[in-house]
Length: 114
Image (cartoon, rainbow, N blue to C red; front, side, top):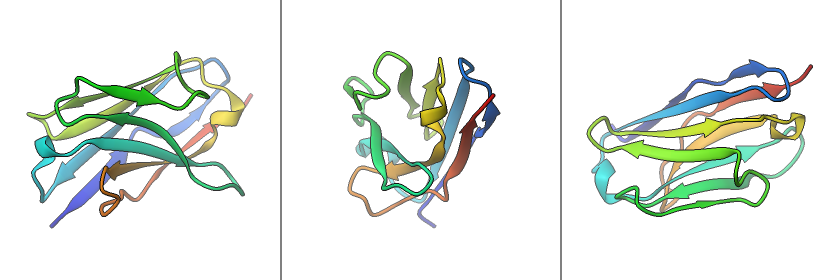
């Protein structure tokens, strides 16, 4: 079964950190670039970060560059999103997505509030 399962969301105070994980199964993970999207409350989805299949190339939205880091472990079939210095505007449901858009995880909630 082709599947992406996110974990690691939660509630933190501004300035805090979280690490999201996404476990892949059912497809050749090491052949695909992977992405993290987010959907803030009442807003459209936003592409947050992309990582190439090898992990050598990464791209970030301007809103998170310098604070978020995307990484992957192809042996563990897992992609990560390390989030630091979190801000209230980072509050959203975060989704792990296969680059072709055909596979999405169920999403994990991140809430940043004092």
